[in-house]
Image 1 (cartoon, rainbow, N blue to C red):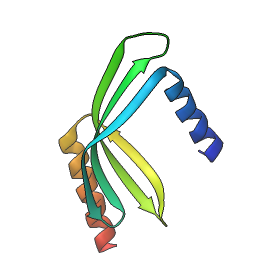
Image 2: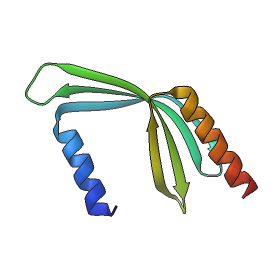
Image 3: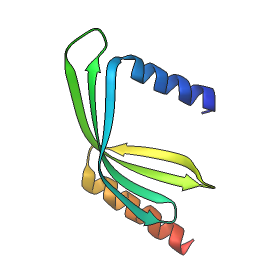
Image 4: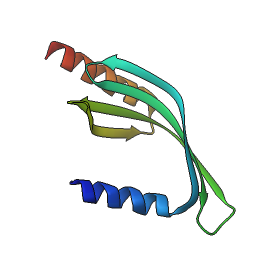
Amino acid sequence: MGHAAVRGYIEDWHGNYGEIVFETEEILDLGGGIIFSVMIQDARLAGSHARVQQRYAAVYEWVDDKIFRVTAYSDFDEARAAAERLALERADG
């Protein structure tokens, strides 16, 4: 997926909302370019007063000072285990 495709995806996603805010609840640098976070997305639907909120975990993989991959999880334990496993693999690497 190239830059234009990623930008299009994010623009389409954000276009569904009249307002969107992300809050970081927890963030852990596990080393080796692996970051575990718990995020809260709070948004107002476009053209509406209705709000939606989502709490999720994300694992960020950094390579050469750039985000290489972000994986979102609804299961926080699964996300933390995946992040710890990736950090260990990179440390052994």
